[in-house]
Amino acid sequence: MSNKTKILYVSQEILPFSPETSTSQSSRFLPQAVHEGGKETRIFMPRYGKINERRHQLHEVIRLSGMNLIVDDTDHPLIIKVASIPQIRLQVYFIDNQEFFHRKAFFHDDNMNMFPDNDMRMIFFTKGVLETVKKLGWAPDIIHCHGWFASLMPLYVKKLYKRDPHFADAKIVTSLYNDAFEGPLDKKIAEKISFDSIKMDDMQHLTAPSHLNLLKQALQYSDAAIVGEAGVNPDLEQYCNSIDVPLLRQNDEVDYLKAVDEFYDFVVLGKSELVD
Image 1 (tube, rainbow, N blue to C red):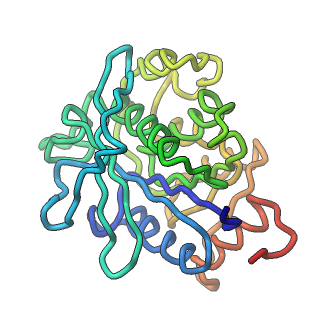
Image 2: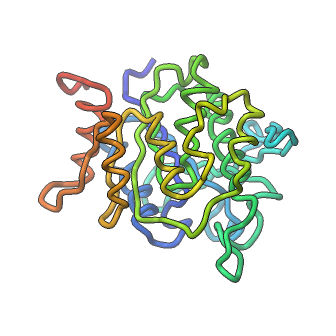
């Protein structure tokens, strides 16, 4: 059995499958640096309809597909696809569902209005990642979440999956980005999540599901956080301080990828020295 540290990356967008943003860049280059440094990684993102499957050579993983996930008391089939990031030997797993992810857009319609079912898409994505990781038989030491669309992951891991042996000991890191959206998600998001036996008392920030509150909800159940770019809402850093969540801030004078890797080892996992 491998003694390598295992890190699960869950992101709303990854280069080259998504446009270039701070989130997609970090989600592309951080796993590579960590993998090349000797850690074991798995990477997940949604299979948006804008992704060209032929160009990026996506293909379905039959042994992982075929599950039905319940969202808001309704069954939705889960399809898993995979592709490799060009030039490096890293695979990305894609969470797919015709109803949620085949529209030719990420989060907004042609008039830049948020899709009304973004909350259900988030729930499906979150559960799809966790159920697929279970099917892989892979137990991550760290789950690193990137982007507001992945912000339900800490809640689900620490509440619904807390006794699952794949996730019981996992530490959660949330990266914060300047990716705010206008308005709230569906105000019934907490009610929909409660179908998964998560108590309303555990979702206090989701009574008003704005971008800020989604990330506060994520931070509440995170073991550490990282400022992923300049311009992040200062209320989030203040919230980290108020609940004693360790925070790695950006520093242009240091190697960001190396700093994150060391943050994993010495802060998140609490190692006293690096172990080969």
